[in-house]
Length: 302
Image (cartoon, rainbow, N blue to C red; front, top):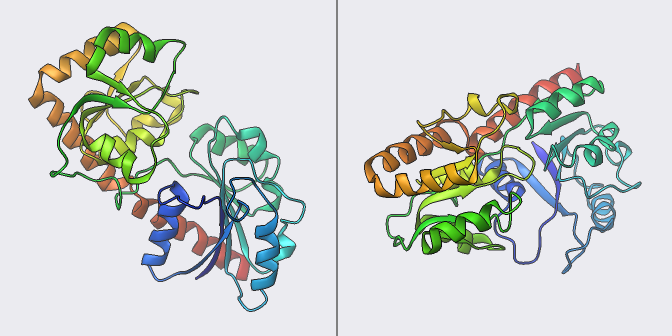
């Protein structure tokens, strides 16, 4: 397939969900052209990408126009008239917190993918074909690294989170809890690989990418308990391949427990790793994406 991908990529970015999907699509032989939602050499959203598309699309017939965004980008120039014969697909990133921004532009697309199960149902209520496309790990980057020395006990990149929860854990665990923000690319991967555990505290009780990435690195993942209606139970099983906490005290107790019990910690970490590799890596999301696209193109052509 010829695919036009619209997503934001900074000058130094080597890692993001769109970059991983782009790479996997190319690995399968698809012709993928990237149109950057950022201005050149900037981090500001721009309509330059649409102008770029108009210039280049005259010589390329795209089967699919695929936008991966978290609600920030919307331009009156970006319409299905840009390429009337193409299938327009939106990956509504950062749902549920960005649902309103994403929903405001779904009329421009034929299909919506969303990482949030409840949002997939809401888009369907709007009459839009929608699919739950959960978060995942790019296992080309996030993988077990036996050569990386273990220098941390439990790490996170949450920053201040949970109305004082992360600060409270740090106060109780001291050097056993390391919370470092704004790591990028290989630096972020190495940070996870150099720990025994990965901690997460979601902002919106949503399934986050960090839990898949931590598991893909072979680490026990401990995260705040998520509601059943997120679909988390269809992915991870509590105390078998992931650990949940319901309070600051429980988080501290469980971190301490699994730091003292290496065998149990490693057992859960291995199962989490298998869960990601068996169904929640970029390869699996592209499997699903191809299935959706081929079905839709078949109906469109019919």
